[in-house]
Length: 253
Picture 1 (cartoon, helix red, strand yellow):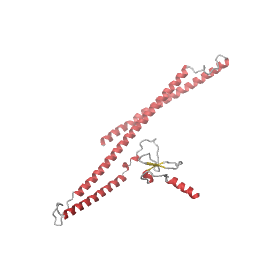
Picture 2 (cartoon, one colour):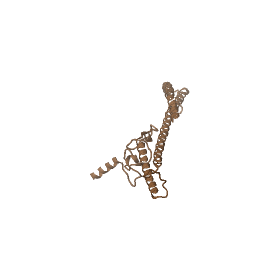
Picture 3 (cartoon, helix red, strand yellow):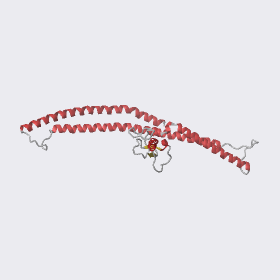
Picture 4 (tube, helix red, strand yellow):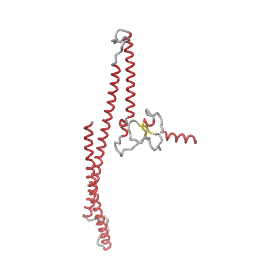
């Protein structure tokens, strides 16, 4: 895990420098594009005025299919398009670079959460093993084997009860620890800042979701856990806001 952290930190340190170079190149391309566009506008305006004068003087036939800009003006326009395409490509590269680091961080957090859960399970298993390893002793201090007598069977029965109790306690502790662990909530990880959010919690789509049957619902989709739903409702289902609105309308009628 530490090696992954070191690798991620090393790649993150170079990210600002790479982005700075791309943004500087974008700025230079934008300046060049503005200059070419300004020159092309002036050239086109000048050629339009010349065409108008030629039409008035009768030197140019007023046929729109025969009138066109000069090759220089057309070349400037094509060059502007090429620069614009380069700007778009640079912007996409910068976005993909940042998105790759976000996904890498998401993978690290997910792996860390899995290892944390695995450690809790191992700890619970150790507690159960320690509870089952305790021998049943007789009142005189001698350890019984638990075979061939009613006392032995009773000892095994008590041991099984103790084991079940220890397992239940370990499970409750593991559940409480996981619930208190914010890293375990993978929903808090913004995989994509442009991804739409839903539900009252304003989080991205995950797990099972239920849709409000009000066609005018502002939120539309809700996570099962946020609205207390354990399975897909049978028939129509309304969120609490739309349900309250529906009840108020019924009361008026």
